[in-house]
Length: 231
Length: 231
DNA sequence: GGTTACATATTTGTCAACACTATTGAAAAC
DNA sequence: GTTTTCAATAGTGTTGACAAATATGTAACC
Image (tube, rainbow over all chains, first blue to last red; front, side, top):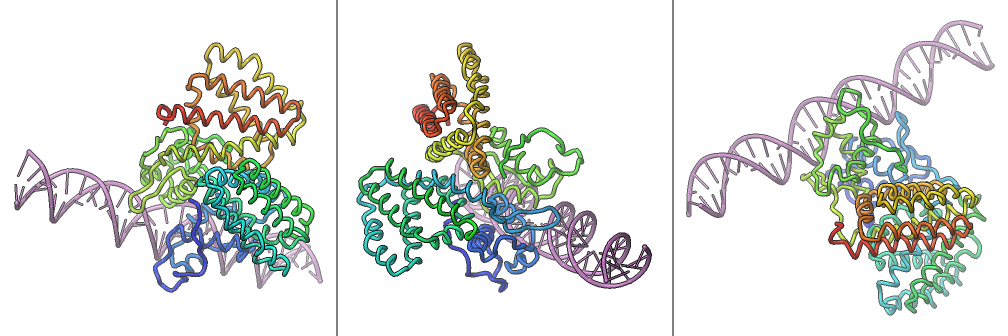
């Protein structure tokens, strides 16, 4: 259920290599959509996909069904499937939910893990990331935050939470990545993560949860301020 | 996406009435599963369903895809689909997430609505429900709590949150209903809801959120204590 | 009597072809 | 020259049938 695998370029690719499994199909499509390889508004034609994956149209159709249920595409009767376009209200709604779920992940991770386990992450968010920030290495910052997210979700040890967060994250991935371009956002995010990590190293789950929630809320505020540049 | 409609008995029902739409199919199946009309472990045969709904098997298959993605059924290759059986760990995981999401709904509802709007609910949770409790009318209690839930979710005005909560609730509906049988549980739940409502009438969103979170956590504790009777 | 092997039957997985709807282009009328 | 109507086309929605795999029941053998 948790879509953990990393799809994308790989086998199949039309060359009569027997089509990929159904889960692979939704994962590949999901990947293309969340990475804006298929930007919002793109039409998804069943025929071309069925030919590319060497499978029949009903299999594509089945994949469309779950993609639609996850809110990644919209299907208009007799008109076909289109990649969902995010509206401002929807982004704010996503942030509202992410605010409590990401915070929950941090709290559970802190509760369920000995504080020492966060030493390496804490180290990563020390000198290495500060150096990266000074030289404007945003990629490194994004990688660190991604790693933090991943570790927290794994440590939270809650498959349902992981699936829900994945689903939320899918719909805002590019947006969140664009957000680091907002002046001062990355620096602020780094400081906030350092605070969260410190609380985690002290085993203070409630504090870590509150700080993480503040972090997401502050990200949402940044989005609001710069929304016309970001959407 | 938010599965708000109330499916079940209705049109179609095999009598050559042209099959129901795809969304109807997953809603009908969803309804049967969450109400334990199809208890955990039931086998879902594509052929009988396609005949009952007067549709072809690929349509059933597509519905199975989203049901599987939502975690309501499991599909074993070449073996078919069975209704998911809940494990204790999974129930606890669901409670952990519900704890923060239901609380979020209450906070957002309080923030986005004038306090007077809760007068009728507050009234309902006053004398009427106390009387019902005295005469042991559990149905009335369940109806009140359901109404509270519904009102909070609508007032929260967040489609993503509504969809996630629906999905969580689907997987534990019968369990939660059984929970009111636990000695003292209903009474405790009533008092907790009264406290939450008071906070809402005072416009104290943060307090209402915390109280609602405590309410769910206390429900989880009750489940833990009586899990061998409930599962 | 119990166990194993085989044949049958049921059920899932997959596909290719058919029917219907909407869009787009051209042609004719104003 | 502009607008309206109609036909052709492309693409979705749906169906039924076919192939592969598993479960079941029976018979033979130990």
